[in-house]
Length: 543
Image (cartoon, rainbow, N blue to C red):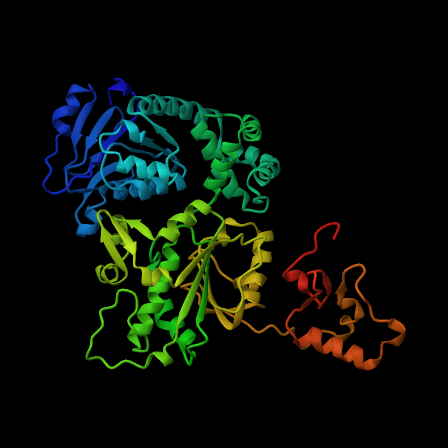
C-alpha cells in the first residue's frame, strides 16, 4: 500500500479471510503505511478514488454500480470464502476494469474469484509465495494459472500503477469497436500462430470472443498496437500459451443453472434408466468439462436417482440403512460419465477432484456430506463417485466423438464458436447419440436451426432430443445414383456396364434408410462411403 503513493487514482478494497476468533488489525496498522483515506464499510458506500475501504470481519461485501454494501444473507459456507464472493461481485460489476490481488493468507479463498475476474476481462495478481508469511492462498492462485502476474507486494504496486496509467491512455486512444475491428483483421494471422504453438485451431471461433480475449492480453502486457502484439506472439511462445489459456472459457460451477439440472433429474434421467439392463450402462458425455464441476454434478444426479428408486447398492458416500430392502445387486443399473476438454491443466484439477470450500455456495450440505470429504479448506470428491467419471483430453473439433451415448452435455461452449464450427459439431452430436438420446445445452444456446436433427424436449432448460437418421421419404430418387457413393482414388469400383437394377435398388435403399457408413480396409484407408457423410467428416487436401 505504501508503494502506491498518495494519489494512485484508484480505489482499494481490503477483504480479509478471518475466522470468528481473529481480531481485525488493518484499521490500526494501515495508517502507518499510507496517507490515503481509510473507510470501514458499514453501510452502502459510494466508491471514490484515492480511498482504501475495509470490509468488516465475517462480512460479505459486494459492489454494484459503484457502491459497496454488506450482504446480509449468506450461509456459513459462503462466509468462509469472503474473498471469492467479493471477486465474483467485481467481475459482474466492473468487467474489464476489475483488478484482483491475492496477498498472504491461509487456504484457497480467492482463486475462484480471480478466475471470474480474468474471465470478465480484468487483470489478476498473486503475491510471490516466497515473500508471503502464509503462502497457501497466493500459491494456490499461482499454481492454478489464474494470476496474470506473480510478484512481491512492492512490485505488484508498481505494476498496478503502470497498468492503470496504460489503461487511461489505452481507452482514450482506442474506440472499443475500432480496436476489436483491428484485432479481427489480424485473427487469421493470430490463429495460425496459435496453431503452430499449441496444435489447436481457433480460426473459426466466434470473432467477438477472440477479439475480447486478445484485447485483454494486450492490456495485461500493456501493448497498445495490434501489430505489436502479433509480433510478440511470433517471438514469445509463452505468450501464445497464455492466449491459448485465455481462450479456453472455463467458467464453470457445480449445478450451474440449478433449475435446469433439476429438470434433468426429474424428466430426463427417468427416461435414460427406464428398463435399463445391468450390462447396458447409461453413457453420458460432458464435452468441454473444464475443471470437472459439471461432470461431477451430473454423476451426483445419476447416483441420487438410482438411490431414490431403490435399485442401486451403496452409492458413493450413501449411508446404508441395514433394515432397508434393496433390489439384488444383479439387477442394479449403472452409468458412466465421459468428460473431455482440451485444457490439460484444467483436466488435472478435474482428475484430482479437489475443490475449494467456496463450492458450498452451489452444493447443498446434504450433497457435501454424501459425496465429498472435507479436509481443511477443501472438499475432496469421494473415490466411489470419482470412479464414475472418466476424464480425457479430447478436441471436440478435430478428434472423433464418443459413441453410443444416451446424453451429451455441452453447455456454454457453442456460443463461443462461429457458425462454421456449430454446423460441423451438431451433426457430430447427432451421430454420437443413440436413438432418442438427449442433448443438454447452456441457457443461451439452442437447436432451433437444426430441427432436422434435434427436437426440443424443453426449450426453457435447453434440452433437446435426437431425431431419427432416415432421410426424408420424399427425397427424389433420381438424386440417389451411383455417384452418391464416394470413393477414394484407387478403391475398387463397380463396372458400370455390369451394374444391374438390383444393385441400383440396394444402393438407393441404403442411402435412404441406413445409417451413414464408411468402409475402411485393414490399413484404415477409406474404401467407400455412403451419401452425405460430409456432415460428419471431410477428406483433407491431397488425400
